[in-house]
Picture 1 (cartoon, rainbow, N blue to C red):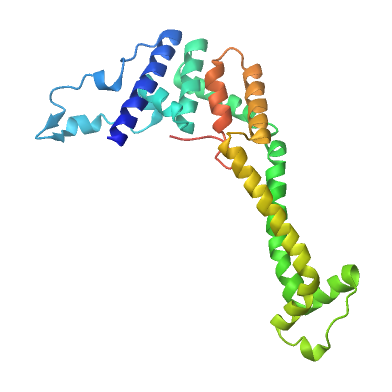
Picture 2 (cartoon, rainbow, N blue to C red):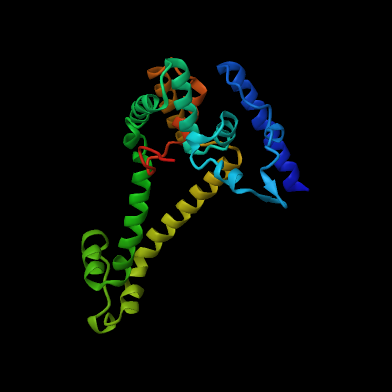
Length: 247
């Protein structure tokens, strides 16, 4: 019953969105998915016919406006792209292929400066990955331990006969590595706990700020097109995804 209730709520919500968009853009779309007429010969013995199966849309470009709006509400990147493309067609009175050329310019504009906005994430990843790798030789590799001790610690090391095994080296270096690694671990634990509480509150200060900055810039560069469509696309366009999304 919970899944059924959720499905009905989603259909109701997306149908409402579709009706609003249809009114705004003069789209002639069905009121809801449950009211879409199905040809009487679409099913036989409770199974779809060959003719009906052939009519299955295989790309986002072949879907109805209402289907596209539903998937866009679910933040499917290709659906958000399709909303913008169809809005370009309606505003500029051009065909699909020409609208796709304009969309490519919009996508390029949205990615300007994305590497700079992502720099804090790259920095955090690089520092964590590098620190994790370096911690192993700094604790267990004799030459690295001696170098670190000479440069930063100057503690008295055990005789060489007590440093013949990796664990013996670790036992010697642990006297100064334990406070460093322990403090870093405690700091990261506190930051992780703080981050989880911010997530519980729905707060992501820098992440949301840079998303809004990019979305506002995209809207300002293309004010003739629907701002809601542009914002939705801008906020789900990730740096690791292909520049030109395909169906």
